[in-house]
Length: 67
Image (cartoon, rainbow, N blue to C red; front, side, top):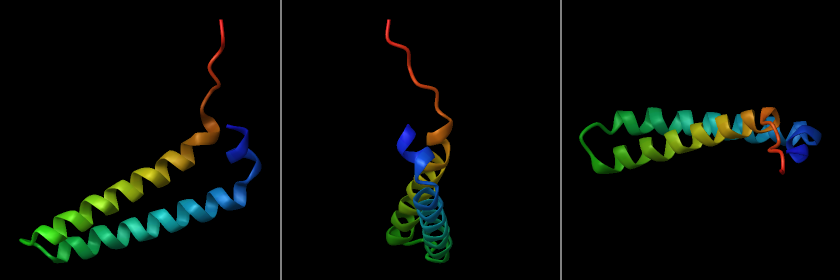
C-alpha cells in the first residue's frame, strides 16, 4: 500500500475523476427513468463511486502479517 501513500496527487486526481464522473452518470441515468439504458448508466456510476471510495481507503489499510 506504499504506492498510494507516496502518490497523493495521482490518488486525489483519480478520486475526483471517478467521483464526478460517477455522480454525473447516476444523475443522467436517473433522468432516463423507465429505460434500461438509464439503469445501466446508474449501475456504472455506482461502480465508479465505489472505485473512488476504494482508492480513498487504500492508504489506510493495514498490512497483513506473515506467520
